[in-house]
Image 1 (cartoon, rainbow, N blue to C red):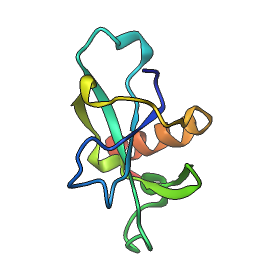
Image 2 (image 1 turned 120 degrees about the vertical axis):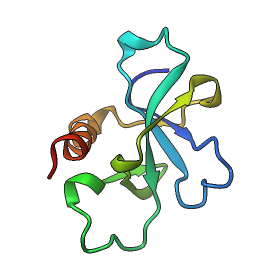
Image 3 (image 1 turned 90 degrees about the vertical axis):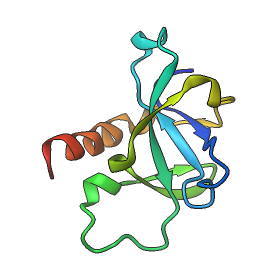
Length: 105
């Protein structure tokens, strides 16, 4: 499992709105049994109050999704099975979204 790999959301109850999660944890921390992930959301339209940096758009398997950086959380790595994509090419967008959560927009 590499940083920025995308996985199907391991929670069937949340998969309708958040079909995927992206691993953000550094590759240097693979010895931990958890992975810090960011959900990717299906949204027809973002609430007007949502800062753009916080919910930037990415594409996974041809589907347009919004970052849900404010919902980042650790998950047991054993729940993240096979990677379905990578967002390595969107690394700066993912980092900007995290920065927006921590530092403000």
